[in-house]
Length: 505
Image 1 (tube, rainbow, N blue to C red):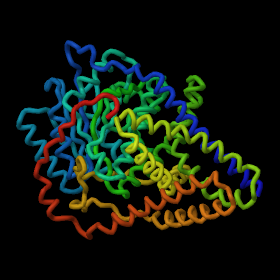
Image 2 (cartoon, rainbow, N blue to C red; image 1 turned 180 degrees about the vertical axis):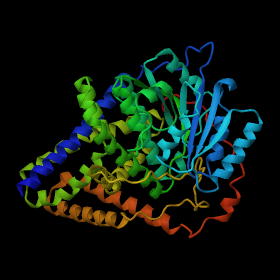
Image 3 (cartoon, rainbow, N blue to C red; image 1 turned 180 degrees about the horizontal axis):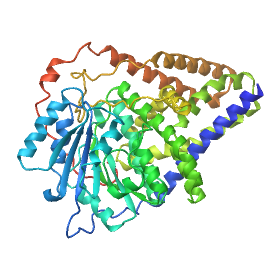
Image 4 (tube, rainbow, N blue to C red; image 1 turned 120 degrees about the horizontal axis):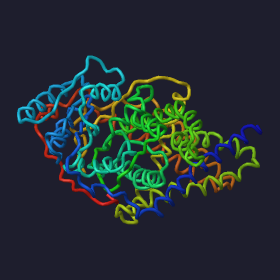
C-alpha cells in the first residue's frame, strides 16, 4: 500500500508543477502586457507574394463562407494566390468547384486542388499545395475561420522586418460564443490560452506553437524545418517545434484577431480535444529528445517540456481521483499533499479570471463561466486520458475532423444534423466515474476530510455535465440528414460583420 501512497503524492506534485507553471505564465503575461508587438507599422513599397491555403474536408456548411472571406482580403491581386485544398468526399467538392469557378471568371488567382487520396490528411493536403505555391509567405485558414480584409497587411510586415521570424500567429475570436454554456466555456478556455499563455511565451522568447490556422508561415522556414509531417495528429505543433529547434522564431500578434466557429456538440468537442491531446503527446515523444539535446537554455527546455506534455494533466486528474479512496481509507501520511494541489490550482483559476476580465465580462458572468469551465475540464479527463495513453503506447489513429455548421451569435444547430457524430463510447465509463466521485463525496463528508469536498464536487459535476450533454444531444439526432438544411446549402449566408478588436475580445 505504501506504493499507492507514494504514487498519490507524486501525482499531486506533478499536478502542482503544471499549476504553478500556469501561475508563472499569468504573472509574465501581466508584467509584459504593454509589450505588444508592432504589427503593420511599416508598410513595404512592394508587397511580397503570398499564397493562402484553405485545407477543407467535408465542410459543406462553411466552405463558401471561408472562400468568400478570403477573396475579400485587402492585398494586391497580382501578389496573391489562393489554394482551396479540397479532400472532401461529399457534396462539398461540388460547392467549392462552383464557387471557385465563379471567382476565376472574375479574374482572381484561385485554384481548386483535389487529391486522389487523403494520405497525410491535413498535413498531406498542405504539403501537396506547396508544390504549386508561388508565395514567399504561406497563410493558412481552416474552414471554420473568417479572416478580415486587413489580415495580411497586419501580419506580413512583421515577417518582412525580421528575417528570423518563421511564423506569425493571430489571436482566435469566436463568432458563436453565446450559443450555449458549452461554447462559452470553450471560448473562456481558448481566450486564456491566447491572451495569457501565447502572449507570455511570445514575449519571453519561449517556444510556442502555430495553432493550425489564422497564421502565416515563411516558406523557407517550412522547408528548412523539414516540411509538414503526418506522423502526429498535431502537425502544427510538430512543425512549430522543429522550426524553433532550427533557430526560427514564432511571433504571436494579439492585436490581430480572426474569428472562428466553436463546436456546438459535445461529441465534436471531445473529438477535437482527443486529437489535440493525442497529437501533443505524440509530438512530445518525437521531439523532447531533440529539445533536450539542443543548445537551448535550461528554462527554455523546461518550459517546452511542460508545454508539450500539458495534456498529461487530464491523466493525472483521473489518476488522482482513483487514488483518493485508498489514501483516505489508509489514513495516509501523504494526505497533506492535497494542500499543494489546492494551492497550485490558483494558477489556472487566475489565468482564466484575468482573461475573462480583460474580455469585459461581468464578475457574475466570469464566475459562472469559470465554474462551467472547471466542470468541463474535469469531465474531459476520461476522453483525454484515453488519448494520452494511446499516444504513449504508439497507437495510430486517423485525423478526424471537427464538423462545423455555420453557427453564429446565439444560434443553435438543431436544424442541421447530418454531420452529427455518434455518441461517445466513453459515456458509460464517465457515468461510472461520476457515481464514484459522488460516493467519495459522501465518504469524505462522513469522515471529516473536508479538504477534498470541493474537488469531488467538481469531479462529480464535471462528469455529470459531460454525460448529460452526450445523452441529450445524441437523443435529439435524427437517423438521416435534415433535407431542409441540405436544400439551403447553396444559399449564401452573409459573413458576420466582426470588426477588429483590441486585446480582450
